[in-house]
Length: 237
Image 1 (cartoon, rainbow, N blue to C red):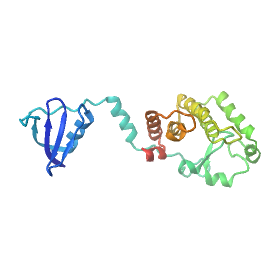
Image 2: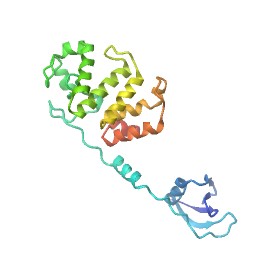
Image 3: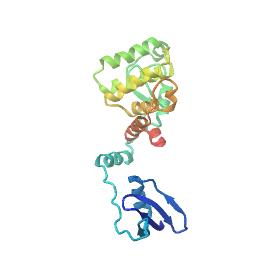
Image 4: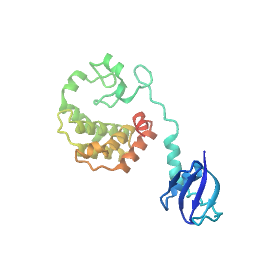
C-alpha cells in the first residue's frame, strides 16, 4: 500500500504525491482513476490545489448492477466438460475433440481413430462420406434447414462457417460468409464455439479478409465463450 498525499481541486483528482516524492498526474473527470485511488492508496492528507485542507473525499462511482452480474458470471468456475459418449472419459481441449458432420455427434480423437470406418452413432460410412465434399455440405445444409434441435442447427452453422473461413470441402474461401453464419448461430442461442469463432472474426486477422474489425464485439463474444466454458477464450481474456 502506498501512503501519499492526495491533492484535490474540489471537482476531480489532480495529483497523487507518493511517500518517495514521486508524483502521478491524473486525467480529469476519470471515474476509474478515482476508484483506483480508493483501492490502492491510504490517505494521510487531503489538500486543495491551494494547499489548504479539503475535507470531502469524492464518492466512488455507482456500480452498475448489470455489469456486476456479468462479471460474476464471467469469473465463476467454468462448467465441466462433457464426457466422451464412447469411452466415458472427460473430453480434452476442443482441438482434441472430433465433431462429425454426418450427425453432429462428438467423440474424443482417440475414439475417432479407433472407429474411423463408420459412425458409431448414425452408422454412416465415414470413408465414403468424408470423400464426398458436396455430400458433407449438403448434410450440413440439411441439418440447418430441417433439424428440430436448435443446438444441432447451431453446430451445423458453426461447422459450415468454419469451412467457408478456411476454404475446406472445396468451398471458395469467404470470411464474410463465415462471419454471417457465425452470427446466425449466435442469434439462435449460440455455443461456446460459435461465440469464440465470432469473436475472432471481429479481430485484426479477419480485417485483412474483408470483415470490419470491432474490439468491443470481439471482447463481448470472447466473454460469452468464456462464460460457456471455452478454455481458449478464458486464456485470451
